[in-house]
Image (tube, rainbow, N blue to C red; front, side, top):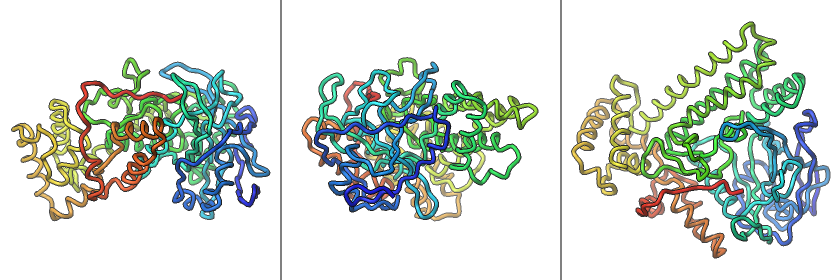
Length: 488
């Protein structure tokens, strides 16, 4: 257990057991005058950290990277990845892993500082981060967790007291990110490209120990590991799509093998429903559009299959055929989970003939009439049709009549159906314009009240409370497409 000025931290460092080519030991670069912006006390308790000590001045120094406990062996992880389809060597250019927190129940998670200074993988970058993107990641990651999506979490954001140069001078900040691990598809790609088959086996065994221990007694464990990863990714992308979430930068280095969402740079939530919508400013050809997320996930998993091939060939007589069979199952898993999720959003407890057409017809109408995605399902949940003009059209009324006939055919009461829908249709999401308002106030005016109010509402998105009503309001019509940026 490391000690720092009365703050007891007991980080483990199991990643150091991997081949040393997979990381570089590096310490955070101290900052001038750190100050708290937000601290996630409930997450600290969940991780069995001393939340009172961690939220103190001593904890601030730790999470700013100014001091680390004795015995802490911080590292930057190496990985590669396909960025917009092009392979490149990457690595943690501005993120430093302090270590792994273990809980009494056997849980293990990474504690990482993002924006903590240069590393050997910085590639000419300054290793720093700015306040806006770090607050965005905190806000969206915690909202996604509350929405029921597997995701990395955020423990804190601190301001560094330093200015970071981007398109203009901006206040510097450091995010403390928590993830069950930071092992990515790109981690396996890196080892396949620059390591040996033994290195690849060591990484795969470590990944199985950490994320899939239940498969260790199976015969073809590496093939089974791949199957588990494919299944987790299928269910993750379904959760994104059901919520109208667009990740925006689904490079292979941004796909974790654990099935957690990672990297909240150019992400956004759909307002006006458009299956082909793109938010990222650098996605000129729609590679990571909303309706492409399933396809890209399969493409990324195919790259993982290529990386694992030397191991699969040892345990399989037809490795490529076996891997392809697992990849093909992605679509089946996705479709089953998506159909089930859409039925739940419409209050349908069982599957009946015609359900798929009912769902498809609704989405077609939403596309045609430029309906707000989240509000449409909220309106159906509450039978409140005052928010959007298209609800008065005959096309919607005809669909609504079909849906009502289907709903009333069930044995559940109307109240049970309504409560079921409430569990699957959030009242509030991180509306893009609300997020921008909160971030602008924080960055431009050092006013964190809008951020804190928005965060508080997003932590209970299925509550349908009076407090949330103002955040249910639809975004103003601006005539300009919403754009997001990587926040480097």
